[in-house]
Length: 210
Ligand SMILES: CC(C)(COP(=O)(O)OP(=O)(O)OC[C@H]1O[C@@H](n2cnc3c(N)ncnc32)[C@H](O)[C@@H]1OP(=O)(O)O)[C@@H](O)C(=O)NCCC(=O)NCCS
Image (cartoon, rainbow, N blue to C red; front, side, top):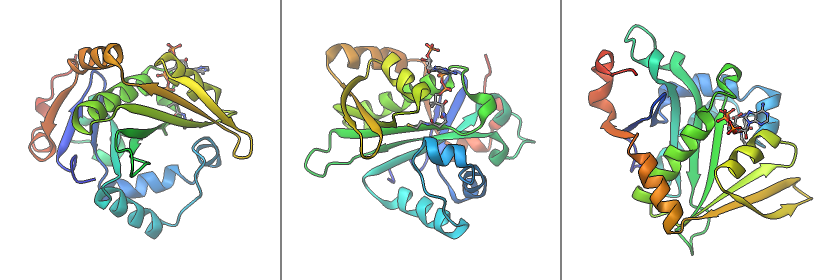
């Protein structure tokens, strides 16, 4: 999706930036991990296929992708952006007949960043963006039945189980954006600042850390 190609979303501990070519090599390294392939139900791709995928995620109108960066590391202009990457978060508009339905995916690829509340922070940020910028009215998450951490995270975020597919060994969780969900997401969005990615990159050291 082009909508976020110059967008940076600043949360308390992370930054969400558009997925660019420069992120592909690290992303490709991550996806060599059999554990991540299994947890995210992904097939390994060649480096060239990963570049093609990045391009399609940028161009296709049904996919919105951000790379998650460690905000504190990024505030040091001496550290390459690639070295600040933590994972990614995506929205897929899966139903052409219902553009308000969004499948949500999140991956904290760096194991040392897991279990510290970052998954929840990022998911909330992405949901806020989805509701306010993409008009999402219902979120879905499809998760492997063995991935208890992810299932538990989405349940904490008030998603409810709607179906189990034993063939694909996955559960589908959903959250409808009613008034109370919307109000909560908008309240949380008060902690998120949207900036211009190009401008912010040239003044990384001015990022205020709390
Ligand atoms: C699943 C994932 C996104 C969760 O992100 P995270 O940053 O590790 O999780 P958080 O620290 O924000 O915790 C969110 C919730 O997950 C659950 N959780 C986190 N770590 C857990 C653990 N080790 N065991 C059990 N539950 C755990 C808890 O319910 C937690 O909520 P709580 O802190 O209020 O108790 C992340 O672990 C990840 O990306 N893993 C690898 C890839 C993957 O599985 N992606 C999802 C594909 S569907």
